[in-house]
Length: 483
Ligand SMILES: Cc1cc2nc3c(=O)[nH]c(=O)nc-3n(C[C@H](O)[C@H](O)[C@H](O)COP(=O)(O)OP(=O)(O)OC[C@H]3O[C@@H](n4cnc5c(N)ncnc54)[C@H](O)[C@@H]3O)c2cc1C
Image 1 (tube, rainbow, N blue to C red):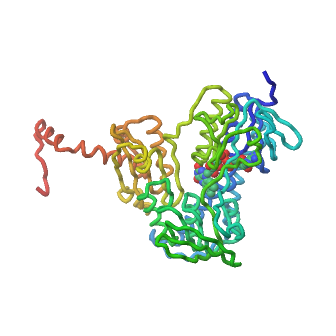
Image 2 (cartoon, rainbow, N blue to C red):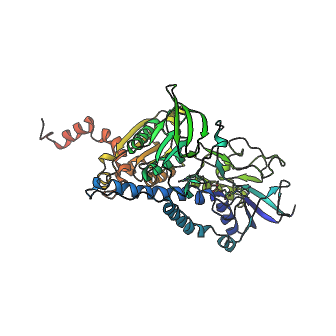
């Protein structure tokens, strides 16, 4: 048997790579992790989830200050935002979390970390700064970068992406966000709340294209009411640098040409897997524009080379990266064959209100040819929502023909947290009647989860048949009012 330096080698020290590294090291595997940048943590920590959620909170506080009267408080006219202070807070939160992703911590767990650019020299070995490292198994967890669309003039016009947006020197007066996906939508609302005039340009007929249109349109309406402008069904024909302003020429849904101008252009049209410079072509690892091609055990065409996280091009979330890291560990280190199953993978767009999803929405159910019924409950009927002043949105429960939940979408306050109850329901195959009967604390937003199941059962419980039976057996006398 060939002797390798390591049991497992990992490219990339983000959510996926670190999950594999910590697990493998703790299982006693000789583990090497190679990270291209100077620190660990990946996009989520430095340019993604952590800075964006910190920014969103800051923007929410500023928004609450400006809308204080809604809560019976005196009118407040806060000073304009100093974005350097906002960026400082973002960096301080990153700094705290970063400690958990330190080289020392992983070294203590038993994993060796090397920083630099490594390339495969053969199917089991990589070369890094003049040294060769071989491993029995490899994991490619190099994440993704913002995709840059081939818009004429964009390459000669200064623009920003999620890499720069959290460390700007000042708050842009105006911003055109290209793309209407989750990254763009979250940032559009946050910057608008901080005082930037934001315009979003989206090619499709709705924002958040994977979500049901009714939920996405509802959310868009809320953002419009806050002052964000959207151009849907709009094609960008060109971009020009005019100095202090940039011009974006757009053909909108009605065929009208618009010359939009803003101080800053934010490009957020999706992600592209980081697969260049790894030497993958040399060892013929299969990948395409979407990412690495894998089987359902996350093995590439070379069975000892695995993919995890954004490089798979499937569900580009931190929790998906962590989950996939766990699947790779099972397959590569403890040799318990494990397949990925995304049926109950939740996600959330952290706008205000949040839009969370698990399982099938109407779009996906229809595409899969699944017969379903839809049950809803509005947040304006939830007492806690009313006390919080957060009454926009609803929950949508999809049941299949066997009346089992196949998906839940929640547009509302803390939707990302509320969906967790459904994570347990769907993964544990819990019966709807269990949630309907379970006591939820009052007044909580989570009561909406119970209420929507009750809406389903209400028709059966209070049916004419039940009423007739109760009348017959117990001689009930019927309505006492409004007869
Ligand atoms: C603005 C924004 C907000 C987001 N918000 C959320 C959110 O709220 N919730 C959520 O679940 N997801 C969110 N995401 C997505 C999330 O950040 C990614 O899905 C997650 O980081 C993927 O983890 P990963 O391990 O695959 O990649 P990463 O975390 O990016 O890690 C990849 C690592 O590989 C390194 N690397 C790259 N090339 C090489 C190389 N050649 N050699 C060695 N190392 C290399 C990189 O430097 C990086 O450290 C957000 C993304 C963005 C852009």
